[in-house]
Length: 171
Image (cartoon, rainbow, N blue to C red; front, side, top):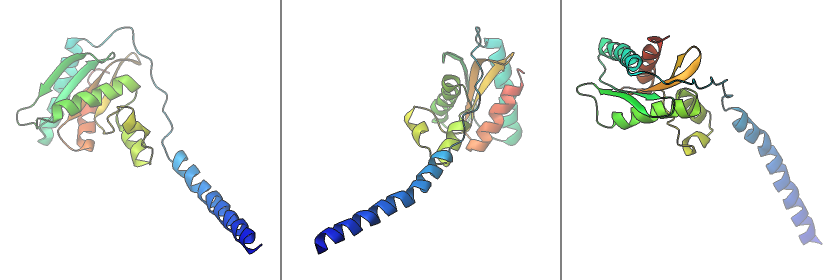
């Protein structure tokens, strides 16, 4: 009889611990940022002339701050339009810039969305192939996605700052 009482007490304790952990699990799930409304893809893609304008503005911002970076502009379908590497930029930044732009284009939101999700404890972003670092931004014309820019070479905050200056050049 003592054994049955001990098992019942143990199950009660385990059940109580399980229920006590439930609010923590719920908090972790709700801590992830809510998805922002995503713009639609345009029926056209960014032109080379537009991509050059975007990169020129981004490069000017990087130079102004003394940062050496790599810039990649992709069409909304992920095809490359333009990549530029500043003299002295680290070699690994080329691939990172491309992945940031691809993340923005493929998921119709800035790559910083995934960085914020990971910081909030939602690790799903890293399993989707998304680059969870700031610096990938959508390029919009008439409110629709025509492409994306990815910037790498500085800190994530610096990359994001430079990418947004590029974005502003075609608005």
